[in-house]
Image (cartoon, rainbow, N blue to C red):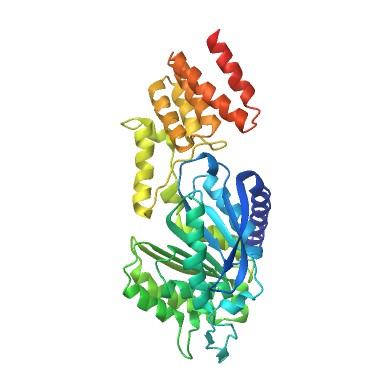
Length: 409
């Protein structure tokens, strides 16, 4: 197979993945909307918030992913986040998107100077007002309405990438991760003629005291065809900023072959999240963990505690994953099958702690108590599962009622 054929096959697979995960959004998330009447940007914006399906049943806190281009990015980001978090490649997250307002997005982008065309971008240069809106209105509202942690990601595309970079340079701790699509040209321009954002970013990182920061910049190779200087920008970005990469600072710029201006979004998202949450760091085999010294709960908790310490926010184990033993539900069943009943009880108690108003963990805790001949505790757990299922109008209530009946016979 030629390189061109390989690239074509990869694009087809990525498009198929996008189609699949987009179809799954309604099943995997809960989306709600509300308006913010902003005094800083002087218009009303509708905010879309996508939270994990079991959000309302959990006690967990979640990272925020803020999208600046609703129509272009919301469904794609939401789908990819669901796919990756469901397979334990990144944390479950709350995805937030801004609707398009009366003012064009360019109105709020900094009016950079294009060094190669020797002219201004002709953007609105109202970025200060927009950042105040984010800092003083939008983010506080999200943090008040939802259980969030202190890890926030901002995602921009083309003009809104310029907004994201401005935010990083002026309010670096407002977000912990910055993803900038179609921005390989932007980093080579600056706020004044002859200046470049590359050097501005270099100054920032040279003096940085940020606790946690990720910056990912990407363009498609088809943009490079018309703007060959993007190659130089990417190369010099990496040369100048890579020396500041550390346990707390992470920067990367790249060009994705065969992709155009908007086409780069899908492969770029996958690459960006793998940059922030590398699979080799996040991959875990629960079957291995339960064989190590200590209890299953201790070993699984220890893995996520180390990950949490590295990222600076609480990271939780996957509780229910299809076709994988690396989740609390399935590994608990394995423990029951190998007669490690006390360990299974410990795991299912943990699941109940994370999702106290979900019926499924109570049911599995009841199964483990039943296996341990603790019938009264089993009945209590089954009844809790039944009551929740009835309230939530779940058909699983029939199975829970039957489980109670059999134990009382």
